[in-house]
Image (tube, rainbow over all chains, first blue to last red; front, top):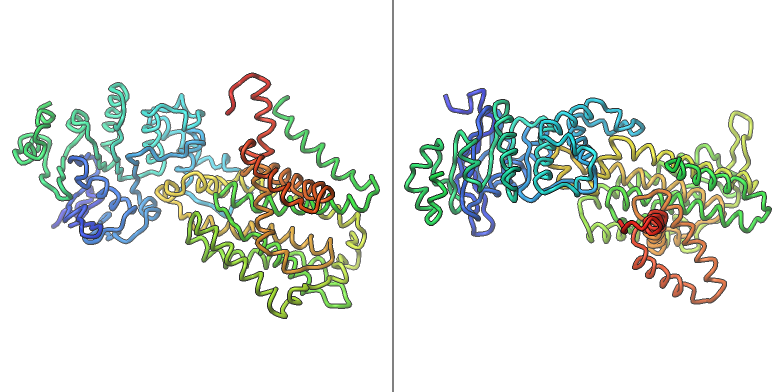
Length: 258
Length: 321
């Protein structure tokens, strides 16, 4: 039967299309995210990678096409509903609560799994489930020593780690990561790559990234987009050997020979 | 030790409020009572403006609705029961805020400000232009609510001291209620919405419900203040829900420092005090007050509640934070 019957396939995009007026930012994009696999999305600026992630996360409604989560059509659900289903995302531009502590950023994320809004006289800090989950996510993202710092005072790289910790605290099974390495130094990128490798076995990950070293180090599958369309999709070796991809990246082809 | 200072200061302030009637000045006792009930009103708005990030310019509507509730529930020559009118006033203003909230919370930013104002104006004209509540003249509350409960009278609202202490008790209850609320998971979500609503949604929060609940709670608490106003002064007019009143309470919150309950109380105190002082100086007191407000916004970002922190920073030579 089709891929969607496979238990490990969590998220599938079928002929996903987004038009802004006459411009097709995404045209017939097909993607599939499997548990235990990291799927990287490559492409030059303006290729439509962020639009694609925004549709998958529910931030943008698709114009056409379907998104299936465990075989169920979720194309019309809101971002909040998708988060509750288990689809978490991080943002290209760091999107945190800068005035809260690192702990509170992640605790809020964890609290979203067990919302007991009517308990208005309970102390949020007594919600042990959320507190423990937050501490675990902070540790997994390698931020334990920073837990009490105000998030806005962290270094850029640490803020990117915080983004990941917040996604982890929501128990997301599908991680949609929009350029988690953007603006990171080499040490920080190295740490992030380690983190991605650690997260990969138990989750399905979509990674949008420009850092080719990192992509080839962690990806099981690579999809290359150009002008809103999928140019090529396959294993890292296939992509590296593809003449089509090399042409699209003309002038950058040395990047593919790392 | 130093972390107990705020608590000690609050207790001293409360002690001062409790002891104030000893000064035996009915005029000032009433003025303090008025300040306190505006403080309750300002705290209720701060829940929206300072903690949830919802700048409402129509908050006086709920203050007024509660005031009219007690006036309309009171027969002309007979006192209504405090025990039915007080919860009713709070409940009706909370319900009104719930209904209005369903519409206004679909908008954001400047549109939210305008739509809350528009709804408040609708309520204003409903009372101003129809016979429902005595038109533009309003209604006199000839008899203050009767507090008889199970045959006994625990306190008597015709006694100015008793009424004063009821207002102080309401202040304490509302303050503690909001403190608990803000400490709870619910409150943390509100503050998260203020900081970054988009991220809250992407973390799986349906923020609309939280905002609606906050809007309704704030309406109900404004209603508690409005009820006490009607009982204290013995009359209600549509002016209670005019946009001036909504603007005034917003100014109190800004003067005191948004997102700080004590700030809202200080803001109300500063506002009423300025009104009293400047109006004895000149007939154009609003001009003076306007200037003070402009200056304080320019030179005192964070409002009155930020003064101790700024002083401390200045004294310890630390840079401003």
